[in-house]
Image (cartoon, rainbow, N blue to C red):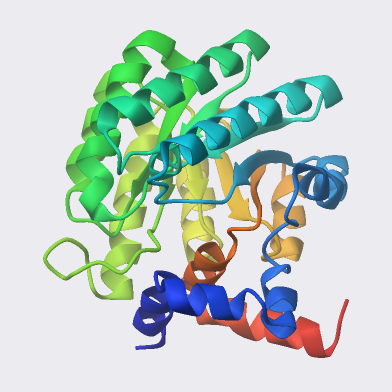
Length: 305
């Protein structure tokens, strides 16, 4: 019930306008969001890089319907790629197609993605196309597959294990040789599209993860869940899968001790680092995804550090 309520609130424009002006909410959010500017995010991530982790920078924003704002977002992502190259930091980027005007048209968003991918290819970097609600899943995959044919390993995709269709999508990406980030999913979905029970989502994640570890191209296992991480550790050990063939991914501000433990054990670990002034929907989805995140944030506001 709490998860469903928070995911619903994440999409409320009225609540967004109200909450983003509240100091307490901002303090809570900025345990999970690395500031509102690119400079903020890089400064906040320095200690992660120094600890042997890599990054994915994500400029927050979605559902842009003004062509000028979508163009501006593409410009900002190209600037981020330039800055990553200039500073020599170990970071890729993640992009939502609705931020690039997918709600305007598929061709419009695809053209802006081409600009970003050209810039990434110039710098020898990588762009992950993020996945959004199920209404966008097939359109996002169609655009991704068309771009993957041109840009190859410069571009990757995200799949959400809680969708029933993901079993089939995992097989498709393996067949196409595409790089996948597997996550559980953080949008409010009807039972007609997604597993409603956590245990079913977890079971689906494990099945899909093992398929990607067996035959995928450098899969990214995105989870903060101890049990699933332990399953992955055990599976790669039993199957003789080298740690260089995949990476774990975790969210900025969550489970830092576990992050450091994975690095000490020799696993590749990438931290997803979101930033920008459109932080509210992202923050609410993180809280709804795992209520323990909310307790963690509240505890750190009361007892900082």
